[in-house]
Length: 140
Length: 73
Image (cartoon, rainbow over all chains, first blue to last red; front, side, top):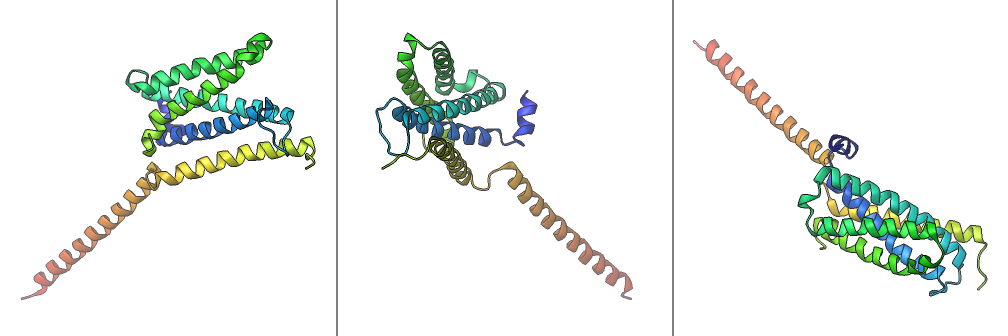
């Protein structure tokens, strides 16, 4: 697996991971905006709630795929032991992400938790990014 | 202001997502500078070529000097 990741990224494992993590974070911020429109908290003259909701789902699917890719690269290439705060934030993030996907699938009463789960995910994406990619880019 | 048709809204919001992705990639990649292994390898190759050429020229000069010494009485 380690060799596969090395080959796919042509030896630039960290750089590719940082780019993908930054894309995820940027999309997560966009998700917040779309969710605000979808829930009617923010009214935009050019975007309906239903459309915002659809795009929120589509963008969210992309985020899930990218997150799994980054997490796989991270765990198989760098391991868990030396991750420190980044590993902790990343693990909680994966748990909350899985929970949110589950709540979306179940629907009903638990769906009331979605705004809270979404906001938590944005914070966790930010913390996970800051503790790794942010450090690498000199931001964290 | 009248809202655009839903298909246009959908396309616009997806294009906005694509633009956000593109900007994130460009900004982060620009931050790296020439640190990718491909660029570093290319730099190393250029340096190696220069060193090889320098050594070759030095060897040619040495050979020419030896020839001159052999030819001299």
